[in-house]
Length: 263
Image: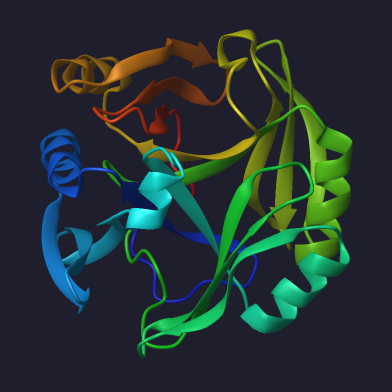
């Protein structure tokens, strides 16, 4: 099912791009995923751009703040997890060793959000929905389909996220690579993989995966739009065909053509 009306707490619900050049980002992703993008003023000289498929929200992007640019923050995709209470989640995260980078705050009447750096060093955000649940379409071409933590300390990550969000985990081998699937109740919530050799210069990160109808064609198109291939298309037995790349501003993301879309 690709249309969503509600998220179970502990489910990834929203991808959000923080861009050095928002106009350049809109051109790239509109061309790549055929998104309809609408600009919404959110303050003085600030715009929040919502991306949609068939009129339903799939993600967003906004220009990074001046202080972020001055600190050398790169363009990046952020991952939001839906939670029942943002304040409680952040307080628990702090008790488990996380650092808060955005304290809980209301986003108009849309919801309440916060962002942390987990004890492994990866940024993750939380969303308590009011009028906006997050992505209204998932698991189809151009929409969010998976989130994956790349880290060199899988054991610490397991401890943190199982305690914080109540996730369970299942270890397995995918394409010769040790892999962990986090489970939210009975459904997969996201994945975790050890840093690969080609990612050696990256800090720990939660990747955003977008579903595509044709992995190779998407990679070729992204390259023509100024993106770069980090990990070329490859088949994962029993999963699908995936690739890792950066956009025209070096923001990291992944695309995957699943063998079977989630129910």
